[in-house]
Amino acid sequence: MNKDDIKLSASSVNLWFGKKQVLKDINISFPKNQITALIGPSGCGKSTLLRCFNRMHDLSPDARIEGEFLLEQRDLYERGLSVTEVRSRIGMVFQKANPFPKSIYENINYGLKINDVPKEKRQDIIENALKESYIWEEVKDEMQKPATRLSGGQQQRLCIARAVSLRPEVILMDEPCSALDPLSTLKIEELIVKLKKDYTIIIVTHNMQQAQRVADKTVFMYLGEIIEEGDTNTLFSDPKNDLTANYVKGHFG
Amino acid sequence: MKLRARERIDNSVKLLVKTTGFLVIAILGGIFFMLLWNTAAFFLKIKPMDFMTGTQWNPSGDPATYGILPLLVSTCLVTLGAMVIAIPLGIGTASFLSEYAGKRLKNILKPIIEMLAAVPSVAIGFLGIVILGPGIAQITGQPNGLNALNGAILLAVMALPTIITVAEDALHGVPHMYKEASYAVGASKWKTLIYVTIPAAAPGILAAVMLGVGRAIGETMTVLMATGNASAFPKGFFHSVRTITATIAIEMGEVPYQTTHYYSLFAIAAVLFLITLAVNLLGEHYVNKFRKFHSA
Image 1 (tube, rainbow over the protein chains, first blue to last red):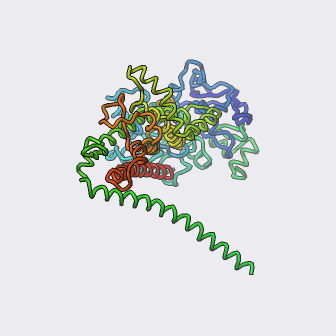
Image 2 (cartoon, rainbow over the protein chains, first blue to last red):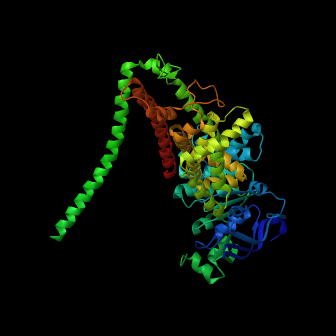
Image 3 (cartoon, each protein chain N blue to C red):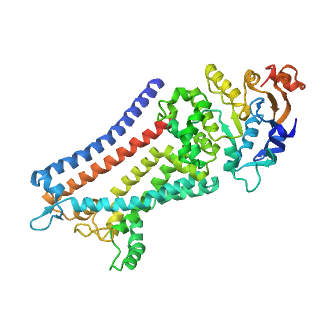
């Protein structure tokens, strides 16, 4: 891979929660404007790895991280780089849709306010983010409605809009469809594929069909290690490793 | 037969538990009835209008006056002062415990704060007379420091454990996913606390405040010892006041049985009861709302 095409990378990463090692010698890079899926059985460390990139582990005192994380050429854990900047450049969408218990408008406005976006600009940004996330048509007339009254799928699209509104370069998605019905899942997947042209996306998923539908590249993890990575079609049709083969065929996991 | 004996025991326990349950309700009803009965007797002699709007409480004067206003204003003044001190302190401490303190520090601090609630009110009254009073006197240049401010500070100390404990529970109960969502858009811990966690915990915090008010309004011994108990109409925080509770405690021991003065004390007790009832109901209402919010 050409160096310029790499958006995000991690090298020689080890991570411990207390005494338990959760990530072991992870080396991985994520290509620009592509969707990379992280798959693997529960507890294999996919979400943990994902959360390293926007420094969500800063909040857990018993997490210890070794290794290097680069966003383009910038070290994400460098002293002097504020965690706020990291998180505004690397957005995140969570497993369970988590809109704030505030109005739809305020859900997006909050992130803008936090990041000091001037008031005059916010209205347009909010509208665009909602349009980009294909939820504008459904909510444009009731922006003051509590976000918690939206359906699960709408809530998740609102959360994507919230992430998108800050114009991040990377969007991390932690099983964004695991709590949704098939129809909402399909809508989110379409949305993810459309977002690819503007963002680099990493998606953790348990759903192998989903990985095949949306991802350009797939990474298979097992017990804290990366077992195999590659082009999605190749990984699913012709896995090199027995563990990968067994997992993608549904023999375990 | 053994089985029948077992059944008999079961039935008698059931009866016993039922009796204790009804007994509590009966006692509560009895108190309410007693207050009401004696209050009614009072209003047969004194016009309710005179009672509610009178600005002088002087039952032993000639003519005797029974205006509740000075007492009511005193009670409100002391309670208000206590809340002005206790609410920011309480919410601040609760925020610290819930969001900033490490697990170990929290495990030490929380029991200590709860222990503060176990200090007898008489002992806190001592504090007012021996330490706070002279201090206030020195600062204000008054002969003594037994005034509304003194009582307010002591009541704040007494209301703090309740406010801190309930508010901390409320803050701690805010689902972690809201905080994560806030951090993920780049918010700092401080901004997350102000814009997300506290608003989400608002019903619980309001409940904490209400319970704190309830505690302060009904407190007797501390204010009796610390506020000076002058029966003149209260002029402010730096003047001696006489709350409803203190008035009842002082006068009940000396009043002749079944006189107007005697009944008047029941009347002011009934007013106090209504106030604390309203505050507690309001507090409960918010606690319940808070629970619903979290089970949703």
